[in-house]
Image 1 (cartoon, helix red, strand yellow):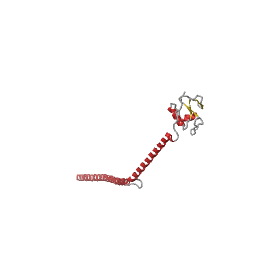
Image 2 (tube, rainbow, N blue to C red):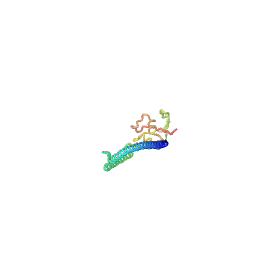
Image 3 (cartoon, rainbow, N blue to C red):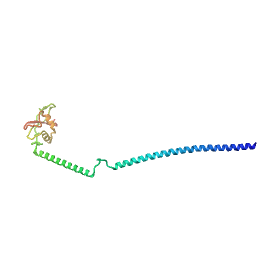
Image 4 (tube, rainbow, N blue to C red):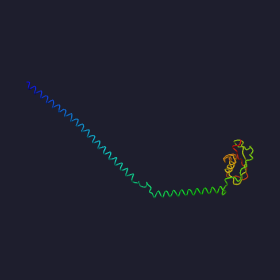
Length: 198
């Protein structure tokens, strides 16, 4: 009986060892299957990345081709730029000629070829006008000036400013209601206000 128990014990131990080895083989197989699945997932992801990279490389290549090709009617050749530069120079010369002509005309008008821009005689400011000249603002101090041939309101104002009376054309017109600056009557006396006089 002892022999049978020993054999039984050996047989049980062998069965246990075989069963343990099979269980260990099954666990190892599961781990291998799991690792194999993960490797396959990584390979699939890499393949998808490769496809995306290829698509992006194609887009970059297409953009490069588009940039290197001139668009229809969307560029200027060297001849076009030369023509444009010539036209700009021609316009600049015409503008300079027009400016020269305007300056000559202004010079001619200033020298007496047209309406005089200055009075023929300096204003007489030695004798001030009486202070009875009243406007809406009240009595004012100033001077009477007889209009001469060729005078303009702006020329009279300029002549008085040269004498130290700081008066403007607007102030002269305001001090002489009804005065038509385009139709000055020679010999008529107008009042020139002196804003600085007190």
